[in-house]
Image 1 (cartoon, one colour):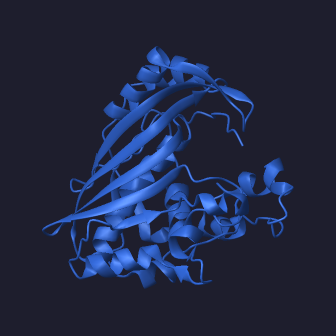
Image 2 (image 1 turned 30 degrees about the vertical axis):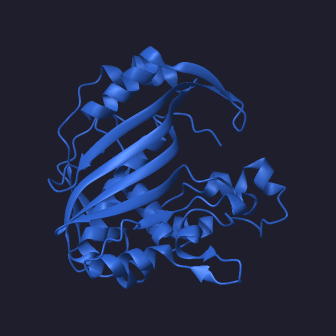
Length: 283
């Protein structure tokens, strides 16, 4: 919570106003933020100065792991985060590549599990990483990338948190995640949980200890209609201690994550929080 609150204060105190073409709103913006999460100590970076909904964040990332491309599939897992971008984004609604209601196109997990090659084939990036790590291999290229400029026009949204690099030091697995753009009041809460979860679950299914997760953000911003709530309400609340993430120990493989795993296999222990804050969401 300390580093999250420090970033919020930094944006409020030092940020520059930038107009965002996609949303038509101004954002108070800073460049470059580095966050660290101690997964080894199970210090889940779930925001405590407002009630936060970790289950949807985990459900969304589980959908990425499965390579989902439809908002209905994410809803079935327990996340409604793709409803708006799939069905309310006017540019995407008019895109001839869109297949119909709830279609997201070739975004996020699709790229991670089925990156298209020039010969008509596909690359399953995540499978390669899991296979390597289970064998104790780190070729310094254990990188999962969702960022495919050649197919931006085939999806409803460019990925924000776009790349994840795993590093194996002895029997301890570390993760560095890169994010080009971050809505700090709303999105960062999700993204922090997802970075933590990704390292924790990958360590478990590859047979390693979880170490540190490093979260690098390029453009961190607060939308103008979010600023009063964050500055005048959330930043005046005292944080509580970090909760712990509990993962079903029966999850042992990528195939488990692809098939039978549900949100019931994850829980949070010791979560104290303040009242929720209804921040505006920008499509």
